[in-house]
Length: 107
Image 1 (cartoon, rainbow, N blue to C red):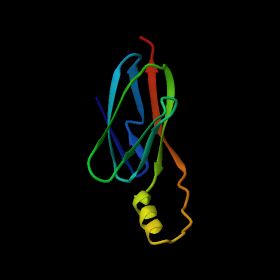
Image 2 (cartoon, helix red, strand yellow):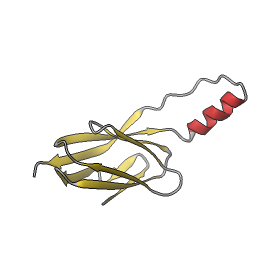
Image 3 (cartoon, rainbow, N blue to C red):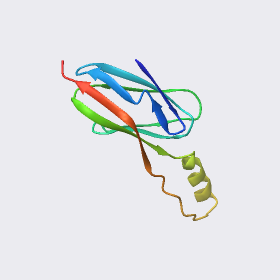
Image 4 (cartoon, rainbow, N blue to C red):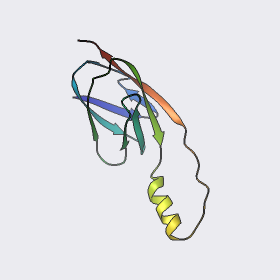
C-alpha cells in the first residue's frame, strides 16, 4: 500500500518502485479533481474532491511507466447541467500533466 499525494500539480512520491508480481494499492489524494492515469497498464481513475481513491492492480509488466493527470475541475457535472439547459458551450481541453513514474523491477 502506497500513499500518493497530488498537490499543486506535483505527485509525492514522484517515483513508485515495486517488484513484478506485487499487488499494488495506490491510495491517491488530490487537491484538484481530475483523472489519474497509469500508462501502459491503462488504468484511469477520477480523483480529487473528497477523500482518497484506491487504485489496485497487479504489477505484471516490468519497466518504467508514466503517470499523468488530466484536470477536469468537476466538468462532468457542468456538461450535464449545460446539456439539460439546452446550452451548447465549447469546453476547454485540459492538457495531460506528467506527474511521475511507476518502476516495476523483475523478481
